[in-house]
Length: 475
Image (tube, rainbow, N blue to C red; front, side, top):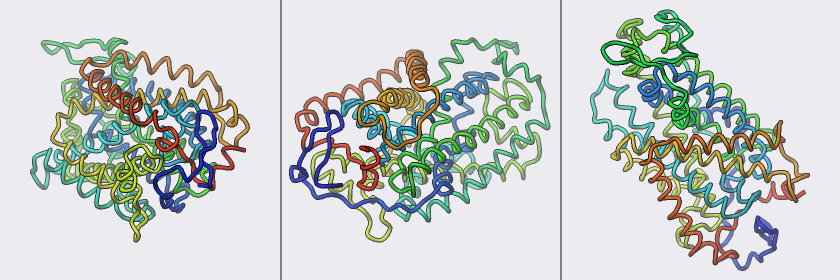
């Protein structure tokens, strides 16, 4: 950071002496495309999404789950282009809020931050709650207690060096991809129905019959499908710790989306075709299906791989989430004592240790909240967050950003416009409860903006960019 900080909405200069606290320490640049892809894939955690979240989609959409995922993946391609352009234009650990704040204004950045904060706080415990089911072959523990244990363990791991975590999570990632691949092979080897059910989806009906899945049901299920594929955006949170982010960020985002989508979609198709009955499919007990297709030993192996995948996901999500909180404090989103705490870095590992504790410990507590409520709120928040990114992408080629050095997406501005329209419609199709929870939290955050942040434009919510990237952005 130089002696001058620039406010994103009007470029006005503000003396650094007006900032209440000293400049926080900087995150270390230590990872490239391979490390970033391993971490980002682990956050996307395709296998844990497949085995923990997808079963709920099978119950709601039946054989239409694969179709909903295909539509979500197509939408995510456009979202990934937006993230790639914005992530290289504004390479900040703040992710979505920094990108939106620098392109379309501080208030939009604040709204993006709130949706991101909801996602990063809720997703890890949602994933962690699935651990107990897949550890059942060796130990029986209450799912909520096991979820809390996983979150605490992930928090401890999140305090370590990022490079070490990249390799640890990479090993776990290999195991979860093996498990997903084994499920896909077994499912395709035991096909019980025609591939036509993927295009003309069905659900188990009453009295053993079959009910068609309507287009409206598929659209309503898109929020959950976006939740399942969510995670490829982690690359932008790690941009400050990536070497040569202008090249590394877009490659990581796009490679992660492609690999992660394949790891999720192919087994989903195999399970859809291989389930013994529609009732078994809607039940979503993938471990039991694997045992039916093979034997108990294979089923146990897959279950243990899935449990490791969940732990892996929790570790990477805590790492990601702590960077978001670190960046918000660096950008003065909170009262000064809180800002100082959240920007404190470990002298030994260089990690934002208080921010890590601040996202990991509440995650353990959230494991005792109703899972359906957590999942519904997250689905709405993910859709709203992607909407904020699409809006930010519309402002990425105006003013000082027009000639800045950055990845440029194809089909601009049609892609972000189409995304906004689709995402708004998807949100309107969600449950009233999820909309009320998300809307209430967003409204409270807007009031915080109006009464605390907005009246203090020179000392609060000053969205910064690392010094080594600032010149490129303002060029």
